[in-house]
Amino acid sequence: MLFCSTRDPVARYSAAQAVACGLSPEGGRFFPETLPVFSFDRILAMAAMRGPRVMQTVLAELLPGFAESALQEAVAAAWETAGDPPPRPVRPGIWSAELFFGPTGTLHDLPMQVLVRLLPHAAKAAGLSETPAALCASVDAGRAALAAFAEEGGSVLAFFAEEETPSLTRRQAEALQDEGRRALTVQAGWDELRARVEKQCVRQTSPERPLVWAGPDNWAWLAAQTARYFVLYAGLVRAEALEGGEPVNLVLPCGGGHQLLAALTAKACGLPVGKILCACQADSALPHFVQTGGWAPRARESACDPSLSPRIAPGLEQLLFFLTRDAASTAEKAALLKQTGTLPSDPAWARAMEEAGVRAFLIDGQRRERAMEDLWQGRGVLTAPHTGLAAAALRQYAALTGDKTPALWMATASPFLFPEEVLPAMGLDFDGNDRQRLEAMEIVGGQSAPAFLKALPDGGEDSGSAVPPEALYKIISELS
Image 1 (spheres, rainbow, N blue to C red):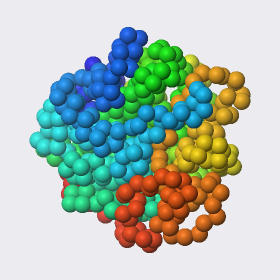
Image 2 (image 1 turned 30 degrees about the vertical axis):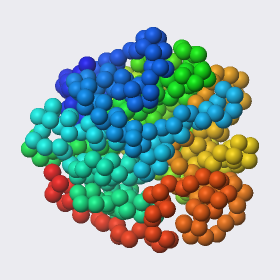
Image 3 (image 1 turned 45 degrees about the vertical axis):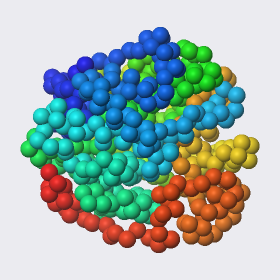
C-alpha cells in the first residue's frame, strides 16, 4: 500500500515516509492510495482480542512496512499510558466511549503516543539521519505531543495562538515543558499561524535536518484513531452489547474533521458503521460543508473552543481528498481555501457525504448545557462540554429520524478540564480558584480529578508571555 499526497497526483510514498514527514514536499497531507478492507470474519475475530491486540491488527494493515515488533511495542506502551476503558452504558442501545484517560485528558493522548513511539522506526526506514524534531499546532494535540515526547524522549515544539487558547490550557502545556520540549504562545491567529509554520516546516526539512509535522493530520495519528474505532466496536461485541456485524452509529464532537476522517476511514475499511453524526458548536463551518459541499466560515462566538470550531479546518484537505481521490482537484481547492477562506458549494461532495452516512448538527449552548445537566441528574455522569454536544446531537437526530440503531458517542475530553462549565451542570453555583473548583467536582461527583491537573500551581495565569511570529520561526530554524 502506497501513499498519495493530497496535492500531487503523481508522487507516491511509503508509510514510513508519510509518518516521518507528516507533510508532503508541496505542503499536502498523506493518504493511502487504497485502503484495506477487513472481512466480517476478521472483525468478528477481533471480539476475542484485547484492545491493544485489536489496535495492532488494524495498524499492521494501515501502516504497511512497519515491523510487527515495532507496532507491538508502540501500541503496548501507548496503551499502558493512555488506553481506553470499555464503553460506558448510558441508556439501552447507547454507550459513551471515554477517550480521556491519558496524561492530558483528551482523545489525542492515545493516537499521539502511538505516533511518537513509531517515529524513530519511521525515520530509520525513510532514510533520515536521525529522529525528526516535531512541530505541532493544536490546543489539545499540542499538549498530547508534549506529554508523549516526555515519555519517549525527543524534541517537540508545540505552539498556540494567544487570543484563542485558554489560560488553563497554556498553563498545562507549560507544565509539560522539559529539555527539548517547548510550548510557545504566539501573537497570531490559528489559521495564519498554522499555515505559515507548515510552509516553513516543508521548506526547512531535509534528510540531514529533518522536521516532522506531528499534528492530527499525520497519518500515524489518523491510523491509530481509525484503529480505535475497531477497538471500541470489538469491545461492544465482546460484551454482547452488539451482535457481530450489527451496525452502530458513531457520534463525534467534531471540529477540525480528524475524528470524522478517521471514522470514514474505519467505515471504508469494513467496520459496521451506520450513520456518522457530527456534533458541532453553533459557529462551526463543518455542517455547512456536510450539507452543501462548500466551506463558509461562521462568525466565532466569544466563548467557543477553537479545537471544536475552526474557521479553516486542518482536516478539510484530507476530507476533500477522501471524497474525490483527486489530488489535482484537492490542490486547487486547498489553494482557493488558503486565498479566500471559503469554497463554493459542490453538490457532488454533499452527495458523497450523504452516501457515507454523515450528518452534522449545530448545537447551541443551551441545548449542550441541558444535555450535560440531564446526564448528571439522570445518570450521575459528569461530562465535558464536548460530550454535551454529542449527547444533544444524538437526541436531535433521534427525534428527527426515529432511528433506533445502537449509538456510540465519543467523550473526547475529561470533564475536569472544564470546571466553569461542568459545575453549573451539576447544579453548583461555586466561585473559587481552579484547585477549589476541582475539589468541589471531586466531592460532589465522587470521582478523582486527573493527577496532572491537581499538580498545577494554585490559581495564577500562565507564566510565559506571547512571542511574535518571527521569534517562533527563528526557533523552528534552530530545530531543523
